[in-house]
Length: 508
Image (tube, rainbow, N blue to C red):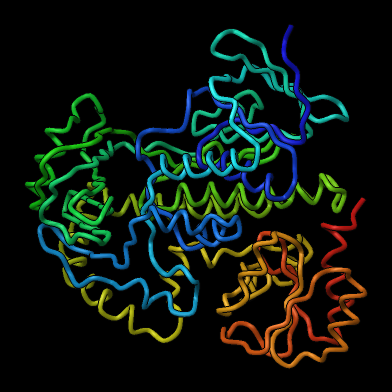
């Protein structure tokens, strides 16, 4: 007899995105079952870098110390051209006042997955491995029915309120749901190589090298000479790209040699975004929703943040604090992020790989002259550098509602709609992953008490404002995912926050 399970959410795919979603739902108390056709976590290193925003999410889950214990920290990016390196760009200087995690953190995908799997087991949850998705059926008024089959032929039926496809770029969930994956595939072939005994790089840093016809991006895998190297080979025939070709390209174009390889693979770069991130009770997240070039080390981070955003919204709906329609905000918030990211990485990838004469002239003439100058000037710019904010994904903006977008006429605020600015002492409270109000500076105690009675939400007070974006005497309504939903003076806060809460928390 087929096994049958009922739960709140069924997650298809136990890669980083699916595991992060399951971990967030577990913290929020939402029932979830996660299935995957593989026999266990990924063994290859694959995606590598964790950005500051992702580290903040790991902090919310109480896992950041585990990440830091395993991660290799890259504190600088070293640009270069051909066989020559320029002065390093110090990330910590760029990140001053932005985040408690002012570096790039190299922790390969396989280690992220094992960390999250272990965390789920500690919470009494586990992945159903060797469980292949067969069908998804929408059940009128009752969510979805997902049929799976185990490797030994046993049938499993899962009935859930929602289904999330986190099953990669070849997503079966996306295919079964009929959602188009719009975009294109780049003509060139990328190689990825994990090597030891690497010579010709600045170790402990991320190296970004350009050439007239070549491109190279490297990441430190540990504190010695173990490096991840990514480059492009100009052929449409992947069968002609082997490790010998990559080794020759590295030596010829960049003067880089290595001893032995731990892993070598090739792939084509896709730039695609799903037309929808939601189709009824079915959602797409991570690579199932968007894929792009590895330039910028954004992919895994974007998927993890998809999961974090969606989990908080699902919890509000499952526990009756919001209507089902609130989940439409997931697509409204995360799809523009994916589209902008895909467009940006597509443009960057095109610039560094184009065979056109003008592009080659720019790479040959412009980069050797202006890249060292930019590397020297950027850390000296006043205030937090937007370069780091964009790279670290701490500058992402969401419109809190369609009405807010229309009223703003496209002008994005510096606080509302963004992740809460770091004040040095205000992130600990975010570990609750609950709606809350923050009061900064000179806010009357009586106003705080009245607001707490009116909203029935925790209110955290901070005596000083160390971040210039947080105004003294102001209050901020903060969502469970750490984004600011509204800001107001003490007099205006009751009405402003009640209005901001009306859509997500009191609808239906």
